[in-house]
Image (spheres, rainbow, N blue to C red):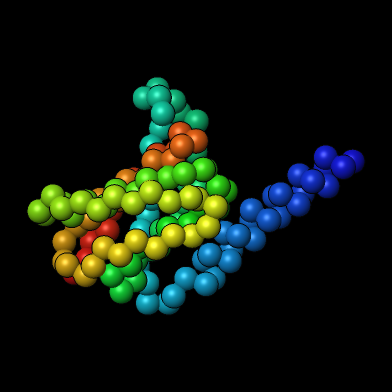
Length: 124
């Protein structure tokens, strides 16, 4: 019985965190779609994306629904190859300043628990 209650609380907290992040995202922000990169090429198990990401006013905001330990985000400007790399803890949201230079940016996030996420952002 205690296990059921604990599991219910964990699931409720996880869902409320995701709803909170989506509801409190600034209205003029640009959502960045992140894809979970599979660990094995033949793996066909669907994976849920555990991170949300959006861009506003030169800043990239990243938040994990469920913490995955330490993460490294590398943002590469695809037009000129300039890259920014930041390491952060996934227990709380993080903001990375990338500026407002127009172009296509690749966002790659690796976590210590084995998660790997890839997204692209176009700034006009």
